[in-house]
Image (cartoon, rainbow, N blue to C red; front, top):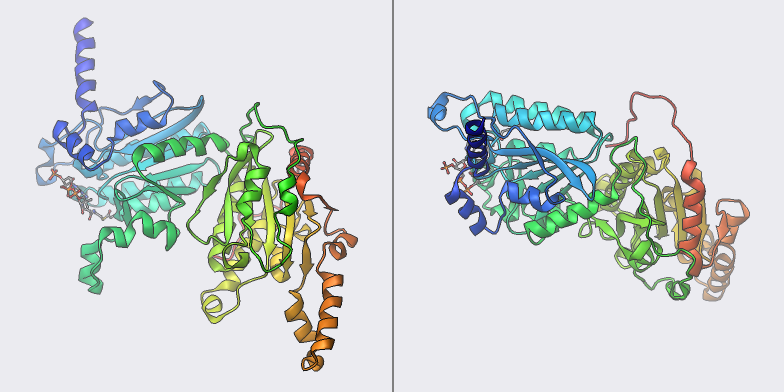
Length: 510
Ligand code: HXC
């Protein structure tokens, strides 16, 4: 028996070395952790249970039969984050560049199946060179099996991808089908075809960073939901995110007992909105004053900054927050903002996370660039997302709610459960200037008349009371009591039960 135990330990030690000391040193020299170090950093100490440590590839082409390495380029298993189960796989760049063979794919597939069966989140850490070139179609088949499982798990368990090195070819599409993608700055990049292929096909000269670095994917393409400076920071932030998410679509949101009282009033909110309706203010100030301890996990912070999306807690329970940002483009809804928020709202709805919406929106952005870019369909995505969402929805209009954007932003008419407005709210088809110029066009040359019409329009429409008279606003609330009102509303809505008509699935305008 002793001999077998010793042999097991030796085999384990060898497997844990992956591609060997030299490759591990090269990995560290690039500022990257190894696959196992990353897993250790992410999970609760000592909680990792590894699967398939001794799996090897079965390829015999190109001399591969002589190059077997235990684990075959991916480390898989499960562990806990603050006591809750999470499945994890980490590509091991030290073994064949983390490339995906048939056996490697089988390890990932096994993990995906276990995560789905056991209803727990799955997180993938990417640092790999795509399909194992020596394996040909066996690798392609392996990818497709993984993609299929991403699709089936979508909306059932949270799926998160972290790009921590190269991620190209077949490796990009599995992350693309997960709920969130995060990247590490300077050491990671993600593209379907790399700079060499780009040069050959399009004659463009571009670096890996310019083609698919974190700076591109967090600001231009919106492929990534966030980026961090190094592996450790990224993994610690992933622990924070996992902590906020439910285990699956049938579990309730996580709840913690210790939270800041909701009874404290915040007088600073009474002066947050400037008197001049054209002056901006930072809606994030409102968000952090409403959520517990101001602890906000923002999604896509560097993209479409005219809308803010992210997670926080109210009375210890996770909520999703969506807010127009008056600091950027006056908080207007454009195609990018609509897509960003629509995806976030749908994630929350999949996983029973209540949605709190703060509205200060002058409308949709006019112009050929927007119209040619498909604003109608992109705007409809957000409309659709809010309209289909059955989770508790609490909305607060702080200032402008103009035109179609009033409807879109979780209005009463889209089954908003509790719709509040601050006294500073202006709920109307459009702002005073535009409205008066249209309906009193005949008086346009007479400044006195225009001023009188404007005053009349402002008095009548630029307030929350016309909407409140119709019940479109449930109550006009004091800004200082916003946290308490939202918390009480969410408490009342805990047992909300609402379902949509049976369908195979909807047909959201893509
Ligand atoms: C087999 C691979 C590999 C791969 C890397 N390696 N990629 N082995 N298949 N796809 C091996 C290398 O041969 C090398 O082995 C080791 O991993 C480290 O690679 P390096 O090139 O030395 O590292 P680096 O300079 O950091 O470059 C990393 C890289 C580069 C940019 C990822 O390796 C690369 O371009 N790889 C090929 C990428 C690719 O074209 N993949 C196929 C995509 S097509 P040794 O023994 O020398 O250390 C695809 C189709 C799927 O994925 C489509 C499904 C939808």
